[in-house]
Length: 256
Image (tube, rainbow, N blue to C red):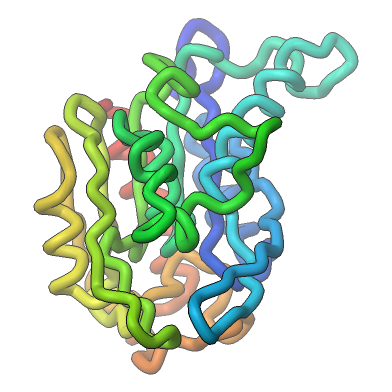
């Protein structure tokens, strides 16, 4: 939708270890509904647990905040093709998988508490924070953040690859901010019971939307250009699931 001749801004936070260029179609189709979409490149972070370490490519909460600020910078730059096109008071975040989880953390009024709990959650979700990158809280987006949608995004942390890490639910507080979780009915990566728990954790208003026939990568350009494939193949075409995802996202954003 166009508000006063300007377009709402959308930060698209991609999933962990999913190639950045596997989101071209969803970014374009959401933009076609009347949004300025920015897709920040993920960063590689080194994660360490007792007796176990690995590196992780993810759009962290810090990167989400920086992407929004970059869009505002381009909006204010007279030489930019986006000059004065973005409605600075109207933003939304669209996230896929862990990108959506991190979007919900950014949107949470208790993000600072979540990101300071290093023994429980910070090593998994709050990547990239240092003295020059503030922990995001409600003041970062403030009233300009109107809605969040996470596709296949769970607040339930199951660190099956690291022994001794308990199953934990990220305790976000999103009361007053509309948040939707989109669930592909064939999603074999984000378990449906975990999405129900995530939905119950969210404040109101909220929505849980089922996309019948789609799997975990239903909003991606394809299902094969991923690091960890979904064990369940889609029964609907990729073109259909991307198109329906964009329509759902626009519908939710439009009523918020």
